[in-house]
Structures are given as C-alpha cells and as structure tokens.
Length: 188
Image 1 (cartoon, rainbow, N blue to C red):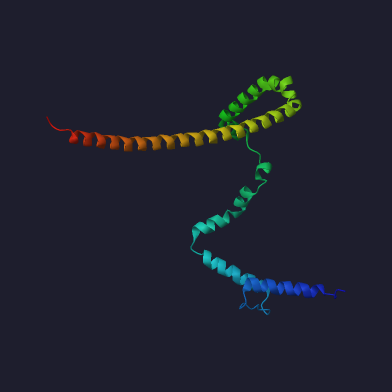
Image 2 (image 1 turned 180 degrees about the vertical axis):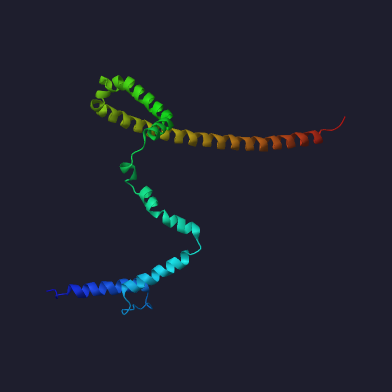
C-alpha cells in the first residue's frame, strides 16, 4: 500500500530542485526581497547596460515590428500584393515551364502506362521468378567454369614454365657436350 504524499510537499521539493539547478548549490534565495524589487533592480541594470549603445536601443525600439515580421502567420495576415505575387511567379518561370514539359510528356506516355502489357505484369511474376532462378543457376555455373578455366590456365603456365626451365638446362648441357666434343677432336 502506498503512503499518502502531500501534493504541496511534492511541489515544494520540485521548486527547491529548480532553485538548486538555476542558482547552483551556493546560491541562496533571499526570501525577504520581493519579486517587484528584483524586477526593478534588473530593469535598472538593463537600462544602465544599454546607455550609450544607440544601435541596440534602435533595435529594441523596433522590437514590435521585428516580432510582427518574424511571426509565422505574418504571410497569412498580410497577403502579398499583386505585384509581389507576379514577381514570385516570374522568378519561378523556368521551373514552371520545365514542370509543364514533364506533365505534357507524362500525358503522352499515359497510354503506354495504361497498356495491356503493363497491366499484365502481376500475371507474369511467376515467369519472372523462374527466369531469376535460371539466371542465378547460370551465374553459379559460369563462376564454376571460370574457376576451372583459371585453374587450368595456371596449370598450363606452370607446365610451360617447367618445360622452359628444362629446355634451358638441356640446351646448356647440350652446348657443354658440343664444346667438349670439339675440344677432344685432334687438329689435323
């Protein structure tokens, strides 16, 4: 069974947690000062900070105007003038013409898209699946044959290399024998 928790205690704990996060562990809340006094002190500090900074005060004077323009619904409240709308359309003229060409091309090809051949695609799915299986089998056979051919070419190259080495040795031995035979012949 849960114990009854007073909502005010929960609220008080949350306020203390918020104060500790905002003010930090060392920050103390001065209960004696009123909220109005704090606001007045902050206002005085802001006025003193802005004194002599004309650019900032100019922006602050136009803050209401800035908020009006930054409001997401500003375009809905103040619709564009006819001239502004015309400029927007003219700036998008190239894109609109391209979209018109695409649309016209799509209308021309619509008869092709509505043809019986395209409509029969779902019925041909089983045949396509069979062709995919055959293609995969052919690919496996191709890879197997390619590997066998590579192995055979490698064996052929090894045989040719071995024969070449043997021929070089035999040629060297034959040349030596021929030279020995010429040296042993008596000179007339």
